[in-house]
Image (cartoon, rainbow, N blue to C red):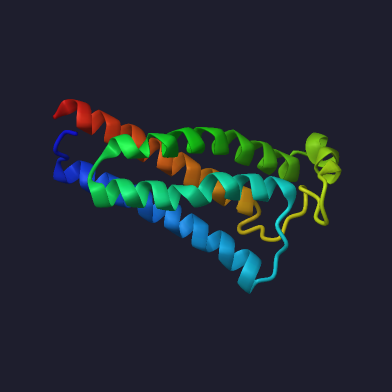
Length: 144
């Protein structure tokens, strides 16, 4: 294990904060607002929730090798979020969203801020931020 620079520590903290905010936001929408998650939302949650633990452990131990599974989960979560967003917003794909198993169709839109920001959009942004920051973290560690 190599010593982490202060910049690398900060990047790891920012990644953890992003994962934490995404997780608490998800829980807010389901537990406080009462929005029942659809099948695709559950897949995104399954990939997002462990990131809080993974990046938290990496930040506490100051070891980015612990965080590699977080990058992998994010790389899987991003295309799922993009697909889910397309089910909601692309008319040609809208009918596919109703085929989800479960009580809520995947094309259901609970929030639509500014006409384009939906829950899958927020998840996609979170996965993107985590991926970009993790790649910056890897680059920073290679420079050292």
